[in-house]
Every structure is written in structure tokens, then in C-alpha cells.
Image 1: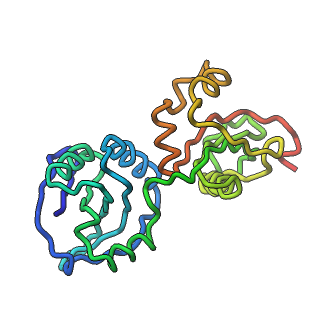
Image 2 (image 1 turned 135 degrees about the horizontal axis):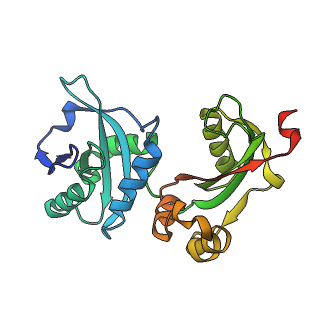
Length: 237
């Protein structure tokens, strides 16, 4: 059973044979981080949901690709499916199904090729990175360089830093070094009171809420933080 979601329309349910569907692996490209966050935030409202997986999907006799959301749940009722589809409406066009509707061999292939939406292994890291302009056009012209602060949810600090560096490079910045040579692990449970309000209270409106940072951690997300001017001449050498 699939809930096809288009914009803010009510989900439409149709029957589709699994033999008429081709699953093509995990999602890639821009916007995936935001999609995982929004869907993760919606699914956390349902206690019966254990986890979920995204996959590119193609229906037989269709040229376009779709996004499948496969849900592991303690309950697989029609009512729960409808509630989930209603909650996800407006996020993105999604074909929603319970994992119990798929054969084990197919489900195992999907899980091998797709990262789970939720992970209990993720930690939260603050990655402060010194950059020079490169080809980026957003940095103020008077700045010699900048410190970009990323908040990355990942099982270890090395891969968290790599993700942050890849993102800044994709935005045209040139990586120079890690500020003070340190990536800091933060406690997401006290994110708002002991980090945002103590360190960035003047700019708190620009930070994720306590609820949202927990979703970011659970879904392995990444959040861009402040960009600070860096005046060290060594950046440009």
C-alpha cells in the first residue's frame, strides 16, 4: 500500500504490485539532509515506528523516478499508514510503505544500499574550520578569511569533519585548517541551555531548537552555524 504525496494534497492510496517496482538505492544530491530531517521529525511522533529507509524507486512503464519511504514499525495498520502519510504531506512527493509488505530478500537489499533514517550511534560535533574565499561569492569582500562553524551528527569526529569540509568546498570555499586544531564533541541533551544560551545567546534565533538538534543527531544531519571574520594573514599565504 502506497501513499502518494503531492505538495499539501491529501495522500492518495493505490495498490501496486511489488513486481512492478524497481528499487534503485539510496538518495543522493542536494536536499537530502533537509529531507531526512523533516521526515525524521515527523516519524518521531509515532512511537510504533522503529526506523525507516529511503530508496529511489521506479514504477513499471514510468520514465520518472520516485522516492520510496520504507518504514519498520511495531504496528503496520492501515490507520497508522494514513496518519504517517498525513503527517508527511507537504514535505516531498513520497511513496510510503511498511517493510512488512516486502519480501525479506528485497528488504535486505534495500537496507544494504540505504542508510537507516535513525541511528543511535550518532554523536554531535562542533567543527570550526578556517577558510579562505576560493570561488565563494558570499563572504564579505573586506574579509581576508572566515571561520565557518558546522554542527555535524556522526559516529566519529573524523568523518564529521570530512563531511563539513566537503560541504564548504562544494560552496566554493578553500579549506585552510581546523581552528585551534580541535573538533569538539557536544552534548545534544543540553544543547540549548548549556551551549546556545551560554555561547550564542545574542544570536539564538539562528540556531536549531533543542527539539530540532535531537532530530538532527538522530538522522545524522549537518547544520551550518556562524561564519566569523578571520583576520590572520596566514590564510592567504
